[in-house]
Image (cartoon, rainbow, N blue to C red; front, side, top):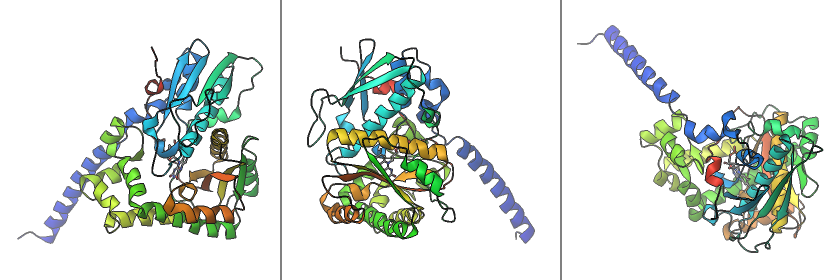
Length: 384
Ligand SMILES: Cc1cc2nc3c(=O)[nH]c(=O)nc-3n(C[C@H](O)[C@H](O)[C@H](O)COP(=O)(O)O)c2cc1C
C-alpha cells in the first residue's frame, strides 16, 4: 500500500520532472528563424534600396500574407508588384485590403529611406490601375535620390516595436484625450483619420464589430480561408513565416495534445470553435476606443493612400504606448456581410463613394512580440 506521504512525494517528483520538461519545451518554442527579419543585423545592406526594403517588409498587412514583390531596376528604382497568389479571395474579393497593405509598405519604405538621407518618390500604378482585382501590372514605381534636405522621420524609431496587438485590453484604462488627439493628427492629408473614445460609441461598436466577427466565423468559406492560413507551432511558423501564427508554449501544447486542430476549429459545434469565439468576444469587448481611416472614394490610389496613412497611425500608436488592432470584418465586401457593412457605414455617417478603409480598436494591452516575416530576399524578384 502506498502511504499518503509517499503519494505526495511521487506527486511532487512528477511535477518537478514535468515542470523541467515543460521549461525546456517552452524556451525552445520561439520561432527564431521566422523572427530574424526583425533583428538589428537584418538591415546591414550597402544599397539604400535594400536597406529601406528590409524595413518595409515589417509593415502590417492582411493576414500577414506579405504580398510585396520588388524588382530592382538600375541604380535608383524599384518596381513594386503584388504576388497574386498571396491574396485573400474570400474576405478580400476586390484586393482592397491587400492594396492597403502595399500602401503600408510604401510608407515604411519612405520613412526608412529618409533615415539614410534618401528621398523616395512613388509613381502609383504606372501602367494603369487595375479595376476589379489586382493583376501583373506594377502597383508602384519607386525612385530614390540622395537628398540632404530630406528630414528624418521621428516615426522611424517605432518601426521595430510596432505591432497589431490582438490581446484583450485593460477596460479600466481610458485613452487620454491628448493621446487621442495625437492619433487623430497622425495621418497624411490624402486619407482622413477618425477617432472616437466616447463610451456610448464604444459600446455600439463593440457590439457591431463582434456581430461582424460572428458572420465571418459562421460563413464556412471565409472561416476556412483563415484556417488554411494558420501556422500552428514553431516548426510550421518557421517553414511558412506568414499567415496567422499560433505559436507559443500553450497553443503548441494544446495542438500536441490533439486539442487544437484545423478541423475542430472549422466546426461551429466543437469546443475549440466555442473557445475561439469566447476569446474573441472578450478581446473585442475590451475596446476602449476606435480609430478609422476614411477615403473620399474607393479608387486604387485611395487604397494605397489609406495604407500609407494607416502605417503612420499604427506607428504613432506605438509611439504613444497605445495598443491597436484592426478589425476589418465589417468592411469586407461579400454577400453575407453586406447588411453589416451598410449598418457600419450608416452609423459612422460615411456615405458612398466615401468609405471606411480601416477600423481598429485601441486601448492599453500587454506587450507582445513581433509577428513572423519572410526574409527580405524572398521579396526580391529578378527579371532576367
Ligand atoms: C488592411 C489590413 C487589414 C487588417 N485586418 C485585420 C483584421 O481584421 N483582424 C486582425 O486581427 N488583424 C488585421 N490586420 C493586421 C494584420 O493581421 C497584421 O498586420 C499582420 O498579421 C502582421 O502583424 P503585425 O502588424 O503585428 O506585424 C490588418 C492589417 C491590414 C494592413
